[in-house]
Image (cartoon, rainbow, N blue to C red; front, side, top):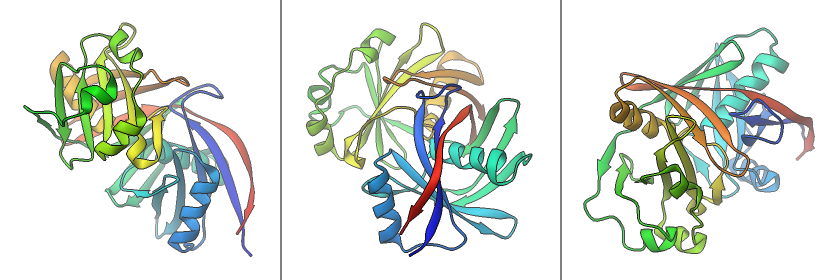
Length: 263
């Protein structure tokens, strides 16, 4: 039986009970994949992050309750927050080796800045059948992310995105995540992210999708910086910048709990 430290952090928010909660489990050596997946299922959060020291950096992996994922923003932010404020107080920068390459995180005032890859979008002349029915609303434009993991659905108004009440069972059958976005009234854009195909009906605050949102809104608005509000029930705030083939995604984080698990 191993005793492991566990933390839960609310990411992309400056207040408790906002943003997106992520569990963070620092390790000295890897657990087997089945055990990490079981811990993620037991935590029942959008993501549980595990990291192990590796030379001058850390190897980082993320698990939803159902699958391991290739990229996760809020759990990366949460992991850096745990490192900077608890495990190595005063640390201001870290590099994580991941399935999506090297991801750097730098502290900048009260925010942590993630350096993530830029996602390309491909317009879809014929969106998947069933998308509008599953969303109970028809987007004005639909794109696909470069890896085909997500659909990118553009609406005319913030109110259109806020009013979405999807059929999650129908969305799950599509087998992809759905990014719903529109111009914001208090921000450059608003977004909601539905991912029942990955075990999450609606994600409260999602860093990774801003790899696509940032270049889209940057080009549409003619500016490098993009202020995004994820208008989920918990709400999340992200400050993004397009930097060539990279996207800088900044947000705050707040620790909710720390404790021990035994496996």
